[in-house]
Image (tube, rainbow, N blue to C red; front, side, top):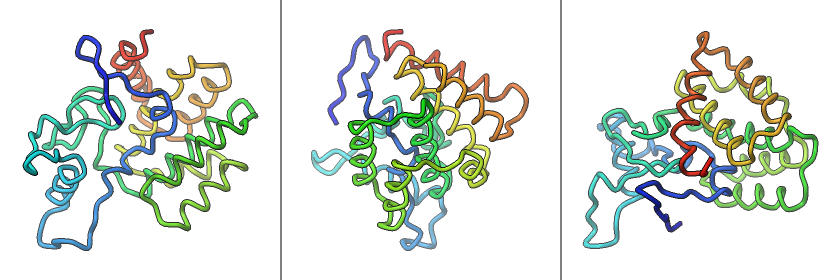
Length: 213
């Protein structure tokens, strides 16, 4: 996807922000080079997926976040802009897609166009056929939030979930149902007091210029 920039800020398509599955693009492959550390393998995979075609070389400053477009710090495996953390578990990233589907259903309605967009996105992401099939069923019958968040256990997975829901809500201008869904997500994740609100504030502050809000 080509990225345009205005005053140094990338413009990210609404479709990507609405449907993005956090961390899926950076899925690790544990079958390769077992002698390497997990972090080294993840760094290599990110570089492989994003490398330039010119002479097969890449400048590490060219690695960018799939959410906001800012640079990725390979020491912390996190975005230097929105704070997205890419060292989360693959299973957590898959369940976060379920949360995105649930948020799309928060107003009780999902039209054919929205369903088609979700199904198209699920087809494109790197997931096993069985997982894709289950996610497509959720497009027509979403899972209960409590049955999703119990699989999101790591601190970084919980923080990323808040960032993802916040970005999606900003794109759609936050209707009442989405705000209620965000509150339900915050409660279900059981983060430290005030932590979710700090993440929401930082995410909104960083993404507002991109949405011209």
